[in-house]
Amino acid sequence: MPPWFVKRELAAGLTVLTEPAVHGFFCANLYFLQGRDRDLLVDTGMGLAPLAGELPVTPGKPVVAVATHIHLDHVGSLHEFAERWGPAVSADAFATMPDESTYADMFRTFAGGVERLPYEGWDQSSYSLRSAPLTRRLSEGDTIDLGDRRFKVLSLPGHSPDSIGLLDETDGLFFSGDAIYPGGLIDDLPDSDPDAYRETMRRILDLPVRIAHGGHGESMTPAEMAGIARTYLDGDS
Image 1 (cartoon, rainbow, N blue to C red):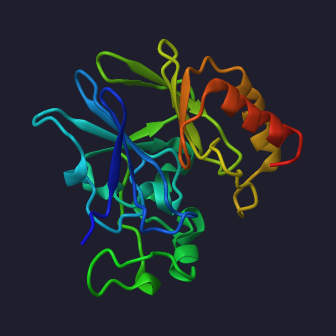
Image 2: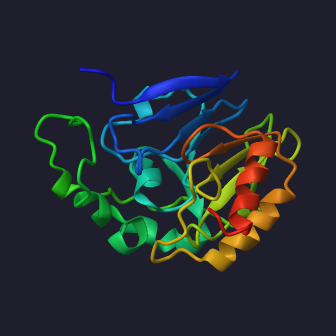
């Protein structure tokens, strides 16, 4: 059986993992960045197959798993990690993973959710998310320090009220979650806020970004990212 996760090295020490057997609507990008003192995992996918053992970890070095927001395709394997960091806005919900926050119920009834089963006997209609209480609540301006690089936490609401991004202001590396990515942004979920999203787009246009890695699709150059933001602001997203 083919591996559940597909891995691709984006740069030295930076790997992206995806779940290609999952329908594209739910197939998120998971980023693993090796740091000097600790490694960083940005988002954890659907939780349909074990994730931790697929990561190029260094024995003895801690891994911090960060959820960019609480939607199902970003938090499914968060419970596998001892250090679970995520947005303070939705922090209490990580302990119970309710459908109204995660939209797990949407996947349970989604036609063609997977192209093949993650394991024998798996039942999409019984899909659920494991409890993953946060060990650190992240808010605007907080810092994630890997030893050799630091990321600033940015509050980027719109797609969801709890969306955050991580920006290395020195290097320009930006993990944007679902705040911005190629292929058409989603702003019509029950907890989406188009007005807040427009403010987020204006903010993104001013960020000192060298390369942006979104929650879905391919990585973005600053020009590509700015084009997506301006298109949204023009009302054509």
